[in-house]
Length: 430
Length: 178
Image (cartoon, rainbow over all chains, first blue to last red; front, side, top):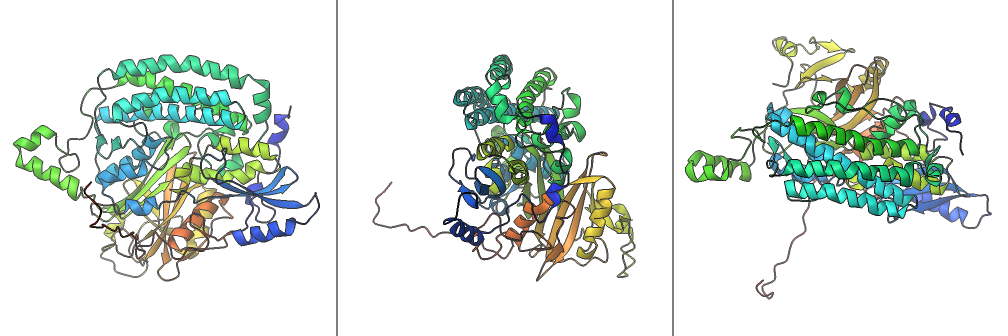
């Protein structure tokens, strides 16, 4: 087994190198020229290998340009943009009420977090505070979403490493959570549930029982995952000491979320810069020690447990009250009011045709998504559409760690590394 | 509304020289309790070096805004010339749990700012994205190329004068009722 302690040594400044950097900075033409060159050469020559974009272990459409020597990866470059649909440009043509349905399609494994960041930024510009129940519903849904997203990671990570049965188990538990989402929001994905001003609907009757059932089902299954993965020598061998990063490198590369925490660096926005009501619940920030693939795997597994702990507290602390702000300019009136009141009809008409106006200004708000810091930057010109909407996608930024993590490893380790970075390509390309 | 109280006090003093509040040697304003620094492209690297020494350990975000069609900008400090392109950089200080945002007026025709690669290598992909979508040049960037769009793409789509584009839909009268 690899001595993990030894791997902690190494150059902290390797990420700063321009020359001899593990990042392969070639464009398509140069890469093609290099490929032509290598065609006729002997065995020990470096070659350029293309991996993806359609490859089962690239989580969608990630393409990698790898410089190989034998089976060892020397330099690499993630090539992205295959899912780019110009969502930031689209956002400029959508009102703030429609905006949530746009951003929810970015990180499709954790859609509620994009909605949350977008809504919090809009609310900051509007200078409004949502009712406490809305805040707690948002927290409940986001933590459940973190659970479902990390369960998806367990499934895909297992599959990438050859534990195919893990894939089925992970999807099975995730499905239980998605079933609850469907009951609350009407959809399994792309919920458009968290909106500026609150949430789209109150929690349905019997939600407590459903959540309690989830809290019962998932923990024993996590134990099963431990048996299947954590304590299994082959699995550990595949992950320990693979794709190592130290805290200095992770900070320099702007990596956030489980990648930063795996290096032993304690940083979680929920704890250190609390938003919603995270300062009122008790939870631990899970950190690793060695910054390798195994730590990133273990962090995500244990974050599920922490999220369940938060959800348990939310069940007790959930306040009664309104689930959205009663501000006629922002929130559509209830259906019954439209029949009685002319004003309500006008407000309803204005909100759904033109949209509500947001005062001039700009703001940036970030939340801790399962992948790291998810930020939303909005510039408003006082109109009903954002003048500019930008999402800081954690997957996009974290993807930069790939060449550094894969350097010197085998191609099979490369697959483990991609999996442990857990990129969602919808968010990378936006 | 987005300007801090201190900087509005200086409105009467219409000199070109900025005399309002400064921080790290550059004008500072506040917007929704968020601190915003306004360095010029020439001051940018120096300001960020100072911020980095002061504990701002991570460059969280680099993006840009095209103010071509923005009606009247009021949130810039006195004496600062508004330009069409503005590069927005967010830094974070983990020790104190603070954020700071830098808004750099990058220029109108040939927007250029220095690259932050040597201070924060994590900005590499973000700067490539801004070049790709806005056409802002980052001087000294190690791989100044497009990232989301293909290399042979023309134009920079997030610019305000770049059309969204649409495909005409043909409705044929021969097609029966549906």
